[in-house]
Length: 431
Image (cartoon, rainbow, N blue to C red; front, side, top):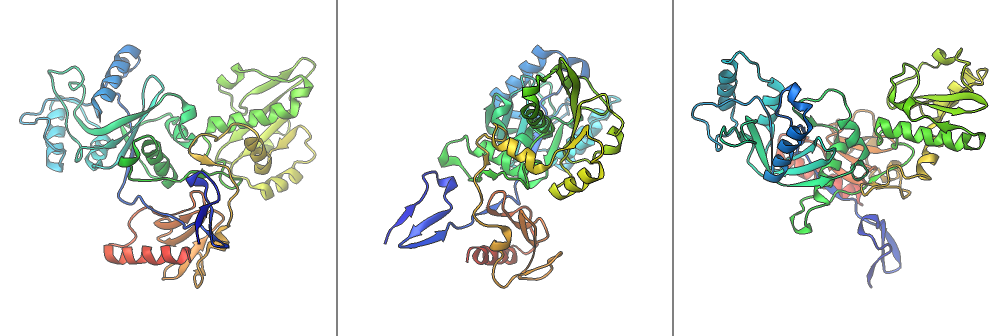
């Protein structure tokens, strides 16, 4: 008997042929419980200095060259050297020294850097628009300040990385990571908590280093109707709605006015115009409700398209019936938008997979397990379309998005009991 791969690419193999029998490929297990991912901002400058592109870019490029990242609030602390670790005691001494000058350091920055440890991942977006991901190689944060060096006199505490992996364009970066950096308010350092974003940041680094050094093999994130909305940043969601609108109205002589996207409007995202018809417009929200009644009397538009990522197809049908007398309003369903996504280049980089999944979560429930809302005992789990949760809800769970069993954080204080539990569930879900 021989084993043959039915598909060439390892990451897309779903079944193997053993003799005459098809057998499902084993569901992998990934442990990210002890790994944190951090958004860091290489901006150790005053507000006025940050507008100086050349100054900011030179400091950030020096950080990339020296394989470091760090926080500002620079001050020379007596007795500290580059080898001084960022312990609670040393951090307190630093804060006291800095405050003697009448200034206040950011508690969030200090606490964040105290928590960074070897093996964590850091991601930065620099002034040049490039993204950089590094894996922490130092044991943790340590004192960086050095008055004699141009770069290090701007920092107080920081870490080294093994290397920085560079991504020159947003097309190379997972969409929800771009969305995370699009937030208006940024702290000096911020822990990334959602498991999907952690998996994607890890993949950005691990996929682009030599295979001999890789710690993780992160599967591609499977995209389908149930999860494509939460996989997109708000700009992409608006873009896909614009493509949907263009497909509907391209034969009517409508074209998009790009400047309308840049002007902040209370109720609309952008406008399409035609020489002999009223304009068409839209309102798009990723994870917020939209008050449709606000658009009932807006008859100055030929059509107003509405899309909210909070509404499923059933809810859209209900809303369409409720507002069916208002012919100028059209509510787009997730199914319609998903068809537009599939026929265009959205979410098509190396981190996403659009192939149909072979099995549903219901089909993957291990034999002998009871499905309930809040699992509290062995052989109990909760389930929805994308997840099977075994312990602590999002502690140990199967993700259909990654087709993987994931330990997101430690579910038991006793390591041996945790290990036995994981092995049991791994065995059961693959049986």
